[in-house]
Length: 147
Image (cartoon, rainbow, N blue to C red; front, side):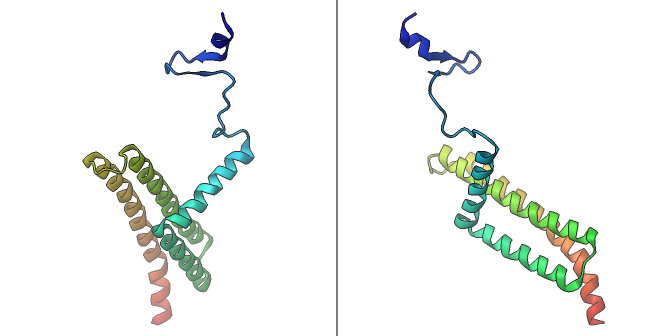
């Protein structure tokens, strides 16, 4: 074997060939790196996605309303779960949209449109759930306050 063959590692399952000493700089070296990449993703979503900022403002308003109306611990759990679900689904939706745009080379494709529409539909569904739970929690409190 010559030195070039020693540097090549063959991945039998994937059929990929890459040098043994090639370091994958994008790979997480430890938990702190993983956390940093995740935090960067969250910051990117808030900076680049308009809907993410709208969801964040809505979540803050719900938290404020929870404080004003003195919701129970169970109601807090439901409200926070809904807020985090909506924000999480929006991050996933944005990631899917970015990957689809990259894969389709920013050209229109009906399959790309369907994937993006379905991801947006998932955000809409969890948003409906959040609205319903918010109404169940806050309407009786508003009703009692007004009447």
